[in-house]
Length: 332
Image 1 (cartoon, rainbow, N blue to C red):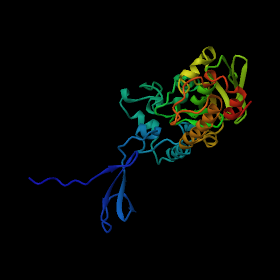
Image 2: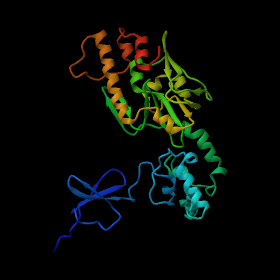
Image 3: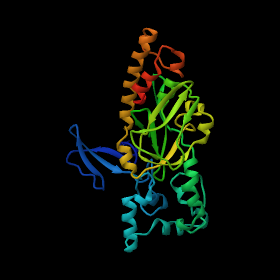
Image 4: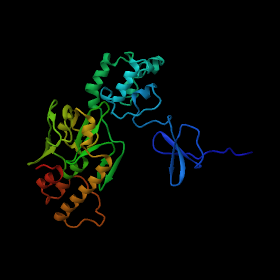
């Protein structure tokens, strides 16, 4: 029996694969040809692969493959506007009409399609503007929904989660589905300053200004101001943290969030903050500064530096609160 000849295939990221061909050979398909290291490769988009953030139009089946690059804020999405224009000209079937063609049990709510909630059937024939649940979800439930990090990098005992954007005053902002941002204090600041006796948080409706003092924390007779990582209006305040400040220390990137904020421009807000790679580099540099401060009051550290635990200030009385606030929170 002759063995079936197969073409070696490798995967590169989401939604694509590649194989090597001879320099004079053509693939004959819709692949993208490229020469690398003196060898010719053909890359094929793999429409069966699921993107990390699938667009609503793709999930409904109106288009074959499209990732969301606007944080599920369809109202400001250029792609959505362009597709709606094509629909009005009769050149494209809308995602709503695509879903209406499905059997009754497969007519899934748009929030379920994009993974924001579990399975829920649509009861309004995809007229979202008439749906009480849609309005309730956007205004109430989305702000209260917990979002824990899916992947975390640990640097000398300090956690840096994936998909979180950091401000150099040790606050974070996570872009939520629908175009709002969730804000909190990072793990580094929580461990350096220890558990606060109270958090002085602004109320709903308060305007936050990027890089300006937005709230504060207190511990015994010490106070520290915190700068806001973004511009925007506070839509929701985490009352659980106000009642139990230790929650912010125990779960800084999950249940310990502080606010949900609506900002005029999500993309502008994100550009002002650090990218994922930059955040890791920055935390490494902050750890080096902290190590010098600890060495000054407690003597040389272990040869490998070791890892830091919680409540660094509380365990090292020689550290100066105001110096910590000036150095890391950029206030005080």
